Image 1: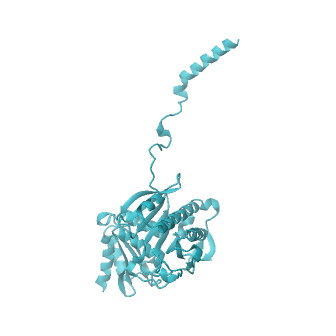
Image 2: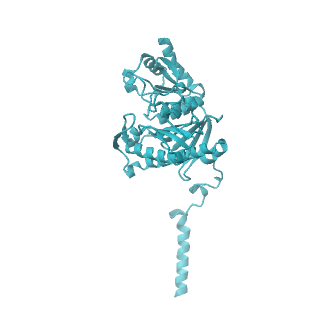
Image 3: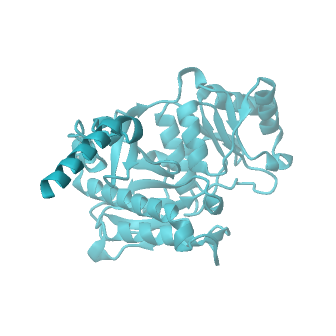
Length: 371
């Protein structure tokens, strides 16, 4: 009985096996069915790139900590809904904006990372009224101004946000004394400018004053938890790129005549309007696609709305390094290069006009014609 049963079972199995191709496909064994990582043996991550392209160990440590803070903020944004981080925190920040819960959390993330880097002496955050003077036992020779979560008003509806920062070296690096004077300087003194965008992907963009290559792009690989270098010497497209203008036209009733005339000409020439409301997203698109980003002064805000130290300056340096122009338009009685401003306070403001030479020059020509 045992052998007969075994034979019967064997025959049944063979019959099933013969029918399998049409009724039960065999498991795939090709490499295409899973992520092929066989060729991924060499990674140019942020840490390695910094070590190979900067000779300053203290600056390398500082930038690594900034990268860590960006990753932590990216994670917080991705989990905001699950973690109950949407909504207001019930406070206002240094510039009078309502603080979101993520504003507060991201600020704490960056402050902790930078203080514990041992490389910073002075910190300026959009979310804090006063500058932070780092205790002497943890102090270094750099100063950092940052907006920890730009565009946070968009976070509850899952629109891209970002971080913007500028790094300065102290006026007297060997001195133990530090103050706001170490950071209240022109944008031309910036050592590193950068931003991190939290969108469909998390992307870090850096610009080192001493690096001849220019603007560098890194993308966060979630599987590695590392920023991977993806593009070097990023430039605004030749000729100005796509015809795009980016501004909040809801404020147009308060604009001056040159801005109104320029926007009217953009429309007449078939430009497309694109405005996210997050400076990081709008400027990132302008650098990659071309066009212009405008946030001018107006009747309600004579000095503009954007902050000089941690919005205007770093973005202007990045845009200029990418081959564009950063201007204030008419500000304090004259048309000025943004990086030449001297901020009067840590939360000082200025008008912002950034983008391709083709389009920024058109706006500035309107001021010249009006003059």
